Amino acid sequence: MPNKHGQYDSISEDPYDACIPLYSEIAFQHGIHFEAKYIGSMEMFRPATRIEIVAAMRRVRYEFKARGISKKKVDLIISIDGIKVIMRKRKKKHRGVWDESECLVMFHPIYRVFYVSHDSQDLQIFSYIARDGSNNTFKCNVFKTAADANEKMNNAFGETAGAGCWPNYFYAMPILVYIRLTVRQSPICPSESD
Image (cartoon, rainbow, N blue to C red; front, side, top):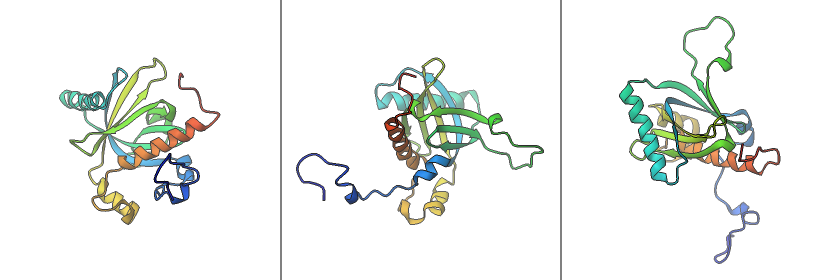
């Protein structure tokens, strides 16, 4: 049992931890898929506070809305390799072979993801900030979950999510933290300065 006084020892007290992971390590290797709508991206300075992060997220939303740029339907694939954003396949049958590289919108390795956040005014909106590899700037990438995300969550997770199921990104945030910690502890991980 956890001690009443003193530091929490995660190794010796691990069996008493009530958290049950939603996904296995094999699922992380293959990638966990989330459907979302890609709102847009914008370069920003390194944020120092949560207020700056939320302000950047809302700035992206309002600027893309003011320009009349429509949201693109995408699949977010979160894996040990990183976060892939892929254009969702159309329902029409394509002739020929489907090439994933043609529809890849962006890819960020996990060690480049700086922060994951949601908008408290609209819980369907979430974003992640990642460092761009070429010029070492930060980009805020904003997404919106599908309108029927709660229904899909109930079907996918049953009663594990509890009453008033949260949208998909609440499950993505612990996943990102887990993957990020796992990758950082790996000896083959590239350095943070990349």
